[in-house]
Length: 231
Length: 231
DNA sequence: ACCTGAACACCGTTCAAGT
DNA sequence: ACCTGAACACCGTTCAAGT
Image (cartoon, rainbow over all chains, first blue to last red; front, side, top):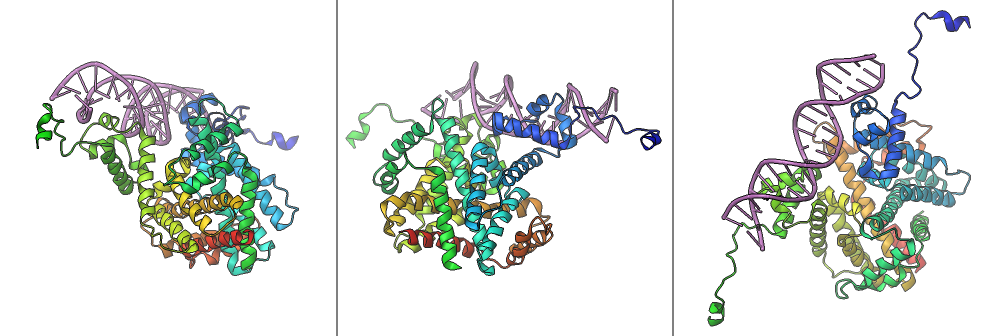
């Protein structure tokens, strides 16, 4: 009790609703989630936080840093949910699916990862995949390539998946369910010029009843099979 | 001769420097190449073409369409340079490298492909890879997955490669050559927290003397090895 | 130390007016 | 049919002024 009273000047009473780097980033995430990437504006964000746009610049250097921080927070959380008690192959599947789901739920994460892959978010994923590559007993000289290949694939597919979803939202008339979307995409493929697109036309029928996540993991397993052969 | 004179009204004399969809797209490509993605502005573009911004809208619907058209043109040309007289594995390597080089030379192509992968440019690449998958005698039910995996990987790696290059341009002080860049990236990796990034730190020494294109093709071969095993 | 909001230098896009 | 360029409705960012 005495200690508390010792100081004459008390720290300024922190208002309950005071801004902070964390609160700004958190608000940015909700804005990104609710209104998409183009919904994140310093004006909209400051309104959401009941302040002026200039206030945000006290806590955040600029929009780029804000997007980096939001992406990093989301990726870190997604990786935290991955339980680490599995064998390497299963662990890789889990990390891959965690990213697939995170990016599917938030297309802006995929866009940002590809825009600035040298930031920490990407490193986090690389590290997780790399550890499992080691656990797979890949020889040291091949670990770098193995982890890089997995990373590129996981991010690449996840982004193309969300792109397909964004396509639905932007180009198709009304909210469309997965089945209808795949059917309409297949119809488009079937309508392609047979001379220019024989292959794509040919596999169009595969589109309607294919399972994204299964295909995705099948691709991961293709790479793992390749890694195993070279290890 | 008589036929030519038949019509009383001749078609309006086309000015040599008249605009056209093609000229606008071509000018956009040079602007993107010289000043990067943020250099493409309707004002800058119209200035380049010695006209007003409004004139461009007569030939192009909006900026999105312009970027799509520019990307499509560039991808189509890149694929046209790929000679088609090789065995499947070699042909896949050639297509993969052609895209790798095209995206490395023009980072905006990679960004646009990931932004709108449902446009024709992506289909062109998919088709080319798919034909070789067929030539590899992959069984029909596996062709779709095989081609998709290759496509995701090729685009994914190419984008991350250009991202590394953009990183150099934006974050490093002066024009840096490849060696210095890789050395500085390795230094950063070595400086990571050993508890959080044991793997990444461990492979840091691999970074300086690794060969992008070789690693890239090694990854392609990993996938091809996996495909072979499942076919 | 932190917040406010008007002001600055840009965008993409539209549209009346011209040829 | 095609072009012009001012005008509109936005941006991200800055900064003097406030508490």
